[in-house]
Image (cartoon, rainbow, N blue to C red; front, side, top):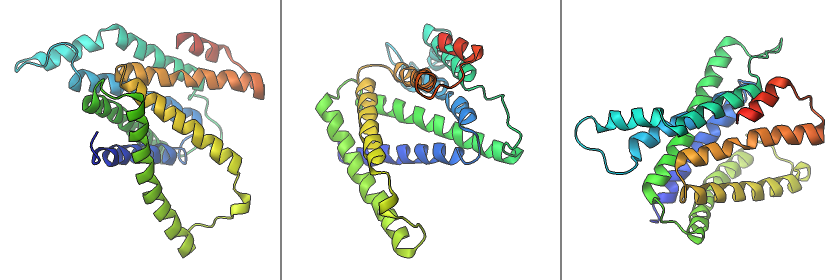
Length: 239
């Protein structure tokens, strides 16, 4: 890969992550997760447009025929079942009495949809740029480049806010064990996603990440002893 490529992907990744985190300020986590589960839908559409299977697009009508064939394929059925499963698990229709206002819901939904679209753009752009060429060591080097740029940009921003008193931070109160463990988990997750994109289609990779939702539910039931509704059980079976 070229040295100019990691900053491009970093820009998409940061914009997407900030949008998702910002949406949590306006929406409950369950509703945010349900809206973000539209990510495979965007991925399927973008993949059918920019990653045609088989021969390249011709000049007349091949784009529309490729999109239509993708929407009536087994992958489209898998995407639909995945989205339905997420909706059944998260149960976004359960609204609390002190829930967000209508304007907050609209803004949160827009941010969550933008994050889902950004994730799809990232995955399809990555596949279109590198195809099946990246080896494991190249994926690690690519992520190291992105991490270096992220450390410089975000570190500089944090240092500026600390020096100006905009953001107050007490190092003694930082849960360093959780910070390091989440950093390692995130690094492993991103490596597996990028390596998966170099071997599979973006839709397959996108559907694979959705499996984490029923797994999280299973952890909540076994460890936190959360209640398990029939609707959530149907969602797990659907996925």
